[in-house]
Length: 335
Image 1: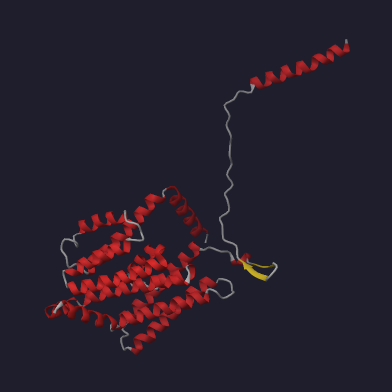
Image 2: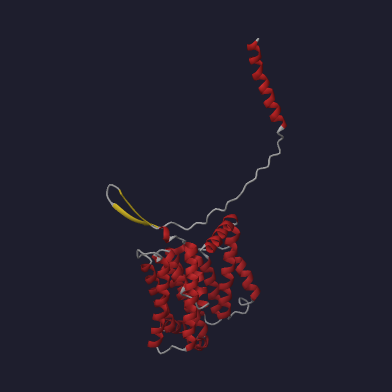
């Protein structure tokens, strides 16, 4: 815990000193990795898929406000899909605009989290985002989980079914878009992953409200365990459970659990050993409150040595003159 708090304090110190520069770097890195993921999965346009173009566009995205950044990256993705099918590109962009408007209405400040949700899906650890959000954010943040999951699986479906989509382009763009929507809605992995992540979010959100020590840690652990059980049951029902899929679920859940616990203890570190039950009232209510103090690092004892360049001789002379003046009246009194 002390190591985590030390890391957090140092990050806060650096961020407070260079806020603009760090925000720029953060937008640059997130934009680069998102563009790189889109390039690897949907690299249908040779110019947009060039590495130097991706780097240059990432620098441009670093100057864009985080509220607008998801829409700009969505436009880049749609232009990539145009080389495959105009109808699918227009449909995908409309879906992303609807999701963006919903996100802008509910959770406009969570732009980074929306993009991180997509990256977590790419890394096969989508569970980490709902675990962290359910513990540290309000219930409305589930919109971020749903939005990121929809966008990722929509693009993933286009990537793995590009040959099928190309075959339907001869029938017209409208028919291709219709086939794309029907295929996405019947995409089993997308549907059950979306449902499982939403269920895990609600499980963690309600468990953390139970009045017990380490409620947040318990909620994260219970949510991870529930995800594994529900995912295994789903794959058994669908007859799609393989050793590789089982390994992906177990390893991904373990990594997500560790990252979620680390993030939760960094974001909201509290000391349950010093929890107190407080009781007070006002004119209308009588309150029973459980107060849990935040964990803080002890200040190190720093020895400060003050070095003064002033000479002590003038002070001594001033003292001697003062003593002579005080002695003069005494001598006159004796006379």
